[in-house]
Length: 118
Image: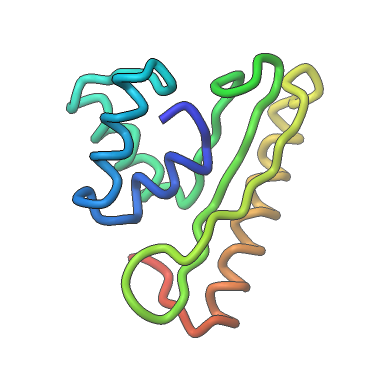
């Protein structure tokens, strides 16, 4: 839950696969514990926007942006990510990185014969 890549996987893989991992991480104190309503809201936003961004979630001072890549078949094949020092991540740079990352993920999805979510 604390990483942008993790959020992409949580949003696009079956919960039967991801929830045991998330619960185990939360029990060990490795991941934030969120109420199920908040968790669903975060994952809905990742699905809707096509990317995830976290700031300082895993490494203080580091922001990360991730986007899903889909291959033929169900679920997400992989997640592309970019890590940037938070102090240089202006709104303009953030928008530019998101646009480039999501465009690249969509291009790879098409190359792999995958379908973009609707």
